[in-house]
Length: 260
Image (cartoon, rainbow, N blue to C red; front, top):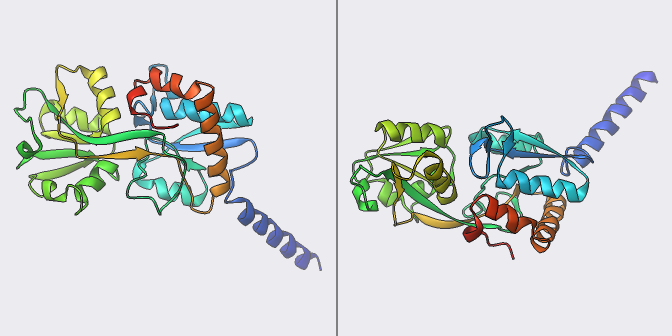
């Protein structure tokens, strides 16, 4: 009888876990998965603290809900495993909706973004056509890489490259661009602008021709629409009370936001 009772308790516990697995990790914490080297959306500052536009937005949501924010840095190419395993509640870090519409439960879009090419100012590269037979760096599993691999977007352009070199993060890509082991880097415009400001715009430039345009959102597991809806409501509140616009101005993103 004792053995049967233990089995019943274990089964009930499993059932509770399965029922709650599609909500948040618990009632008081909100675990955000982010790329720790993706400024200005998520990164480590000079004090060793994780910060950024998206993380401060998440913090503001937690203040509205009475939650504790857990900032969980993740390897970007492992983001789906982290989300599906339940170790994070969402992916919130310059996360592109376009091309992934059916893969996640998405928040409302809040940033208009473009994929661009960054080159050295001394490279002689001024147009996309100049990238023929050049080595182009890009972050693994990024939206920029997806654009370059998409037949309907920029694969024809990418086929003219000598090579696409993938990196775990854009800091590494820029280090290689600076020493000349790659000729260009494909990336989000917001991140590109931040990198140019922090590294010196006299060293690098963004090509006038963009690879594409896209929108950012917060990505949740497909069955987690309840949490998605809460975040959507809170984003609207933060827009209405001025918090959203103040953070966008702080991080130099005011001309890229699309939350209404």
